[in-house]
Length: 167
Image 1 (cartoon, rainbow, N blue to C red):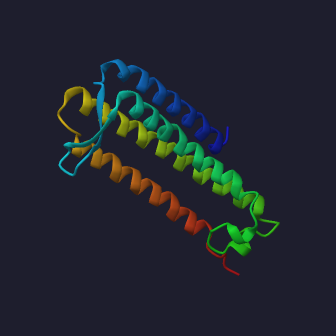
Image 2: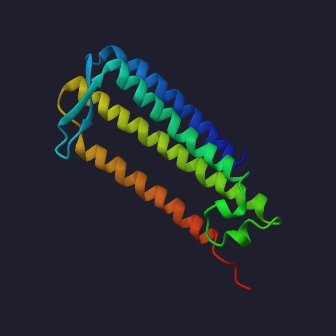
């Protein structure tokens, strides 16, 4: 199995986990759910339980799907509309298929990371609402920093991949 297919399977599992997470926490949440937290971890914006579930599920499931859709769309776009380093070289007819495969792989794993990050944020938000203690800032910051480091590492590796080869 190739790495892109593995990413799709993991992403599907994370998306199912996200749906299960919402179903599990639904009866445990108050009618008014804290949906935004200040720098101090205290809630500062709320929604109804129903609205927050719809919005968060839409984001949790929609963001990774959007990333994958953009990659699929990029394969059909003119070269001038694809923003990668040295695009004329990498999107030349003889390299375009391999380039699109690399972009697909990169975006698949960014979608997986996004889904995982959203699942963690959802869990922290649910726990904050269930306990009334506010958002666990150390866990939130750890998740955020880890997410950003890995995404930037993937992007950096792609920048390296798309450099001009030596003549």
